[in-house]
Amino acid sequence: DRSWGVQEKTITCDHVVVPDGSLASSNSVNANSRVILRRISILKGKLMMDSVEQRHVLLIPPHTPAINNEYVIHGSSLDESISIAPVAAGIHDPTISVLHLTTIAKKDDASLLQAATSSIIKSQNDKCEELFHIS
Image (cartoon, rainbow, N blue to C red; front, side, top):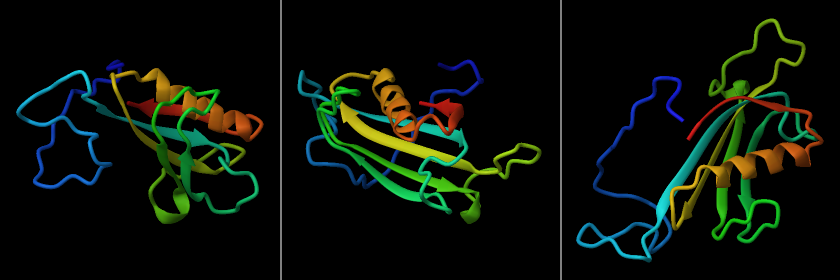
């Protein structure tokens, strides 16, 4: 969804750290090619209710029923205490977190990480909500 005026961006680099076989060869693209999916969300409220500071690493195993992911989903959640998330002025719960999810997939399907985000929020009894995201 490009409704916020975000343009497609390509960044070239010499080195990429990803699981073996997750990037297609520059010489050929075949049926086994994979894409890297990424979703960055701004959340209001605590993602993990039992923690004061929101600094977490998340791993969602492959074939999680609510998500139906073929590969592991890697994530991190960081809050405003380390100056990575905006400070929420004027709201009851001042905790704002940035949730960053990444996985590989055989096709570009943004709904996969949307389902993962929803599942994470529901696992915390919907005590936080997604304010904004970009995929």
